[in-house]
Length: 95
Image 1: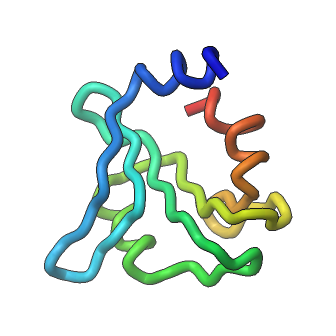
Image 2: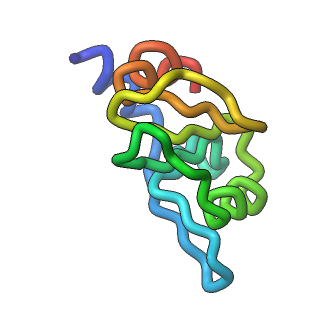
């Protein structure tokens, strides 16, 4: 757990929403550069919201995730869909 918290201290975290409908639950920022967009869903078969795609386009992030309780681990376009456990174990340290 200490490694996890130490890793998180490298970043700032923000919610992102615009008047035009772009919305992202969590934007991970290093310095002043957005590096990842994360959408959190309760469904294990999530739909990708248009507002999330708009957020990715606005922020120009290369690492984008939809995190669910227990979904399979797969990629759709430039978005990784995975469970929270998989995100923490496989992807968080690569951000």
